[in-house]
Image (cartoon, rainbow, N blue to C red; front, side, top):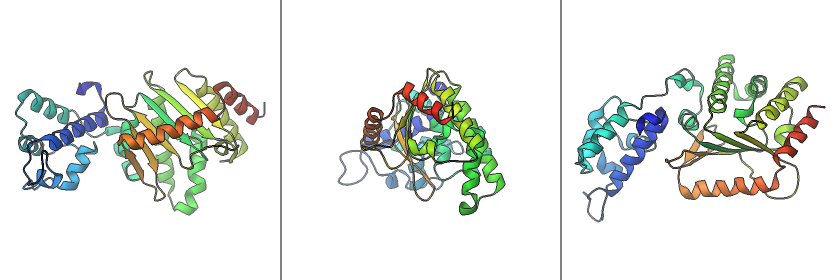
Length: 295
């Protein structure tokens, strides 16, 4: 089971199982029918805080440096099944950090490394952006021009820009070269009308979207300027197969937030589906893009 997943997927699977075990174990606190709080779970464990356990259960950390804490938690959760214990210990052992991301972590906003790891696990990605070409569709020149125009305001460095452009291209290759993932993107018309870089950069970007949209596992739709529903903020929904789906949004402080709460995932899925019906069809979108190239 664990071997079929990448590093982030294995951490997420471990965290989900641990959260379920904690919430359903025999109670140790008065007034509880079952389960225990994180505070009670980590009591007496010097190397594990309540906040750290929350990050473990969210799939952001594991017990790579102290498997003893994992065994202590399982004992507190009254887990006696030797096979289950071995399975979780092995799942933890096989879930190291994403090595390829290490060189980029210092240049990524809060929450982004976890999202990028999950992105590589997804079987389907639904994405919407109202004003910018979605990252996995961007050309290198478009991405660089986008970071450059933000540079004076965000006070970023040349190294920051170079690293982020490299990361975006790595993510693009990692997702689009897989044969087992479907990418569905809705772009607001403004994302294609707002100039980024020079005219040559924009024409190259239009052609890149056309090329990608003609691939069997990629679909792109443009949501034109017209009356009707449109989400005001960008978001991405990751279908993780047997693991809970997650929705990702960016906040005004530049951090990345994700949630696997079914209510939130369903809410954003409804938003996406509503815009699918209002957007141009796949062939209409390609025709629209070809007109923008000046053909």
